[in-house]
Length: 201
Image 1 (cartoon, rainbow, N blue to C red):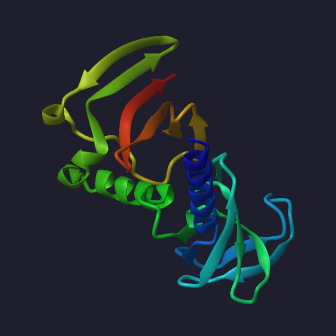
Image 2: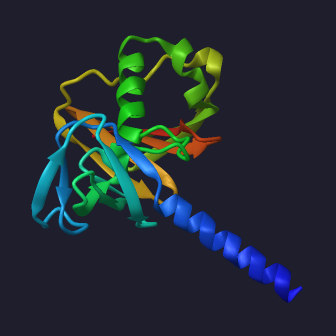
């Protein structure tokens, strides 16, 4: 039993080492590489689309920096320099989930064009909805057959806000006296819209 546990522990260590030394490809352009995992830290260089780096470590905690969602990742560049970038700017063989900023851009464009067929799989039907006016809210559900889209035409009157609520990603934007909140989560490695809330003054 002890021998089996030892072998299992060794295998787990090897898996972690292999994952930590995994090669990744840049999927962003002019990506800042920083000397510490913080926006306040110094930019030591910039990487371009297609550059290869080696993953050294990755924080478990994910967060939004602007519209970009990911975790701080320590990398080694081809120059042997080391630094930090956000995980949403690198792609590895082991990653299956699409980068959220890439998904959301596609989702928003499809919604603006009313191309609902292409995004049906990325909406959890029946879709939860909530409409609020002066503090009073009504909850409802929307079936696939009754879905007519969400207003997402730009420019918005208010700056789009990105946040995390439990395991859901939250997008907030608005026009005049109407404010829209969209809630996304992952299902089988795909981003899915699971709830919308519309507030009016």
